[in-house]
Image (cartoon, rainbow, N blue to C red; front, side):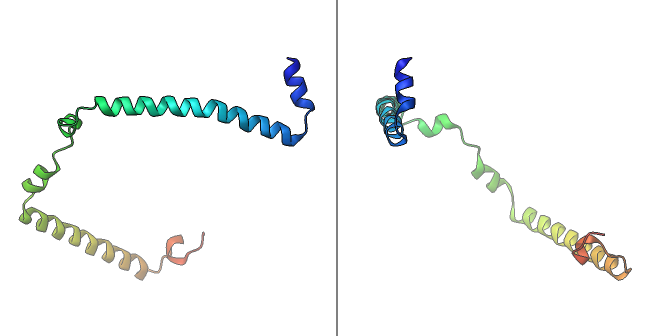
Length: 107
């Protein structure tokens, strides 16, 4: 306990120096242990079947299943929805009612 009392009496420079030394003394061994553990796990990793074990979703299959015709139909639906939204916006603006989005101010 007297050790901490002695540290409290020291100048700020020495307090910082002691803190840095302690951090380095703790950080280097921990970094070494983490590095060794990572190295060990990488060696144990089954390199040949690594991608099979991850089990990625079958993106390629989904792309192949979606035909060009379906994509075109969906694009037409989206375009039609966009036209409807634009018409609704024009009708709203033409009726004279303003919203905070249109005027940029809160009412």
